[in-house]
Length: 65
Image 1 (spheres, rainbow, N blue to C red):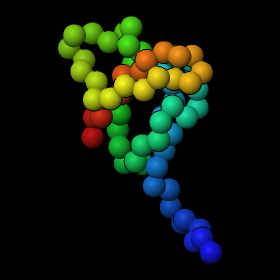
Image 2: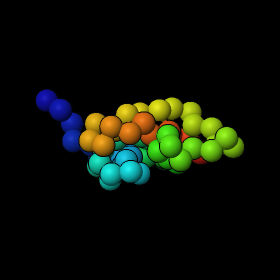
Image 3: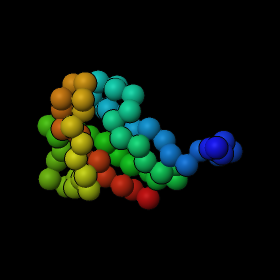
């Protein structure tokens, strides 16, 4: 039997281009910035990339905290 979780441990990160509701899950205490690959400048270095299943854009994800 599964235990009910009393507190949330993860959150959904939304696509910044189309608003797709669950691009990727992150820890609840994680702070991230998301940018479309076409909007990434030389001084903004993403840690990860994820392709949005809805709009098909590559999204750069940078962990802040």
